[in-house]
Image (cartoon, rainbow, N blue to C red; front, side, top):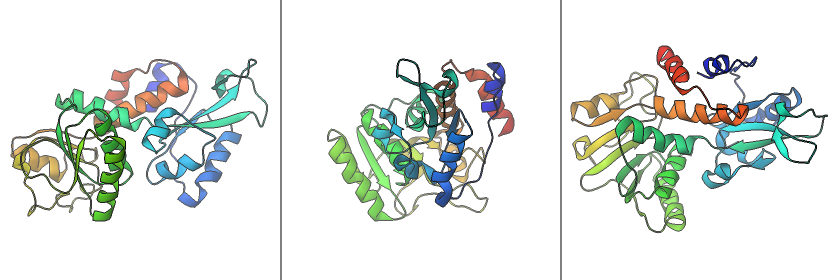
Length: 273
């Protein structure tokens, strides 16, 4: 996706994947800075750890408490921080700023893929880890009417519910399953990645026929057990491809300062997945 975007923009850049142990994340970021990288994307479990490792946090990183995108920046002749590739710099003048492009991608994907407006909606969020927390916070900020939080470790769901009530007192938040019909189920767990995975919720506590739509953040496989079951119940369904696309689109725009070629990036994703 990113390499297709870079090629379309005519940039002599390359997007590469590296396996980095969490214990080595700080050193990896420093190494990328020293080697004049343009920027980085971070995935689980690095998104929360990086908040304390970047030199500066964009408002998105502060708001959602997680970093999935880093941009290396340098000061220009006026002392203004700009993307490092735009500025001739000397060692020691480069900083890394952390951004979160996941949150906006969630609501954009829900609107485009499921025609769902978050404001006033009743939503069940499965998972209270990094992805679930970001999703729940973003949904609350967009004016969701009711949020239900379910997590394998109940204490994490209760802790997140408390945070949401403090930050967004206008949203009705429950740590547990809904009792009636809802507009959306959002799966932010890893259940569904493996072939032998079951459903990411307790079927004795709640049933899919109570939901209008289901969004699974998982994009490989393209149809999880959850989405297959939801489709059979007549729900509108979508996988995580849209979210993956839009967080990547925003990251590319942060690095390049140019509009991303969205449809070219989407095609590259669809062909690969």
